[in-house]
Length: 276
Image (cartoon, rainbow, N blue to C red; front, top):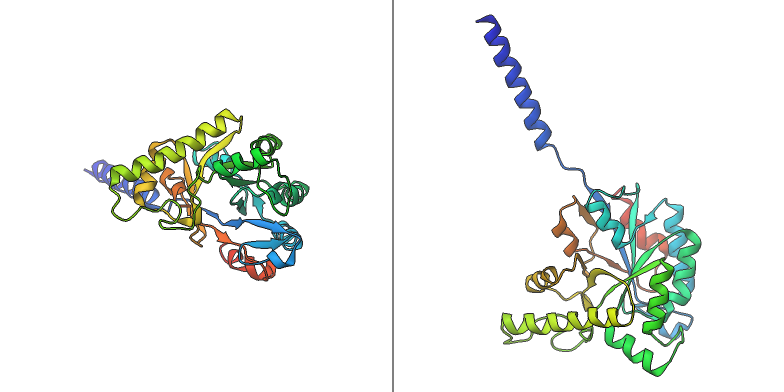
């Protein structure tokens, strides 16, 4: 009887230890993402979505001085699969719309500081600038040729910003049209994204299988569509710091902070520091 009681007690203690271990809070990763658009030397252009070269450099130097280390989407995927160790203070640099200024102004500064990032390109716009031959950091967007070169350099990887849905009309971006059925919506969105992927393949552009929703417009239906099409993540414009546990579905709702002109790096990024 004495040994039976000892056995039962040991069993209960082992069970309690097992339960506590499984109920413990899962380790999480805090991942803030900053979102840039155009960078310009022209003060008349500076606004909510256009900043100066000096502001961009100040941002990068501030983050570097605070011990932040950048990751790109491929590394985020590798972490989710258990194949990459996150740095102590990870963050991500993202660019929307595929402006030439990303390559001309931002990329050299990032490379100098050892940062990487991701840029969302619009397929129809790459087509347009491939045809017109314009290549001006202040005015143009990346051509297919320039997109290929950016991807090959490796500092900034590329992602989808749709083929031709970057429109601030009704509906905005990837939003659903009024009266549009789910079947019609799926066909319209999947056709556009298929054209984007085909355009990248035909022009030799390697892209990460992620999408940045134009104007941040998304819903549960499009989340299902991009998942079904093989996209492995999606970037929104929701201004929140991502807290990730490694669950794959978390990568389809990545929040980002838009960086406007006219605020110091310290004031813009101080909200991040409280999360580490």
